[in-house]
Image 1 (cartoon, rainbow, N blue to C red):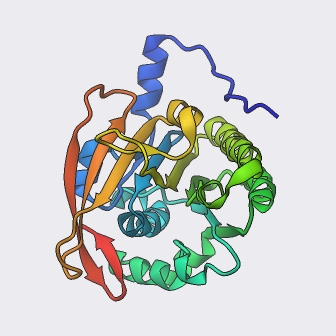
Image 2: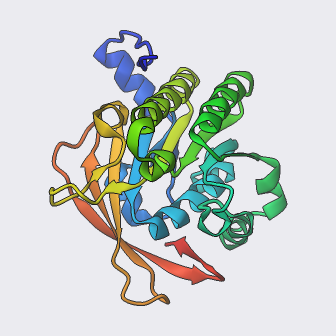
Length: 266
C-alpha cells in the first residue's frame, strides 16, 4: 500500500496569511527552543530526532503543555500519545507516567487533570503500530478536543529489524505517518514525532531514520544532541534542519534542570 499525502485546499496568499494569524501556538517549555521553531503551531507536523535523553524530556513536557491554559501558552486541550516499545523494554520506554506526574507538578498543573486529558496507547510491534494508528486517527475524527498527537520513538521497530522484513516495516512506518497525518491536518491537530538519527550517515548533521518520505512530509525538523557535562546541569543543542519559513539552518543551546529523576526544560 503506497502512502498518500493529505489533500490540500487551494488558498489565496491573503487567506493563508489570515489563517496562520489565527492559529494557536503552544510553548515547548523552553524559550530558546520556541525562538528556534516559533513554538508548536496547531495543524503542523514536527519531527524531533537524535539523543533519547532530551527527547524524553521534550515528550513529557509537550504532553503536559497541551493541557495548560491558552493564557499560559498551552492548547487547553486533550493530547494523545502513541508510544513504541517492546515487551521487554520497560526500562527503555520513553513515556513514563511517573515522569508525566512530576512534569505536571513542576509546571503547576494537578497531575489528575493531566491524566484525565491524556490518551495513551503503546505499540509492541510493527503490526500493532498500524492497528493503533487506525485507532488514533478515529479518535481524532471523533473528538474535537484533541489538539496534540505525540508519536514517541516512531522508527524503533525499523531500527531493531534486519533482513527480509525491513521493507515491510518501512512501509508500515509510512502508513502510520500518512494515516495519522491526514487526520491531524484535517482537524488542525499538531503532530509531534520523535525518532532516531542515522548514525551511519556521513553528514555533519545526522539524518533522521525514516527516509525521504518522512523528511518531505514534515513541516519542521529538529536534530537534538545531548551535550551535558554534568547530570545536574542537563544541556542539549537543538539544530533546525527544516522549517517552512526559514531556509537557513541554525541552532540554540537549551538548558534544563533536574526534577526528581527527570529533566525539565527551562
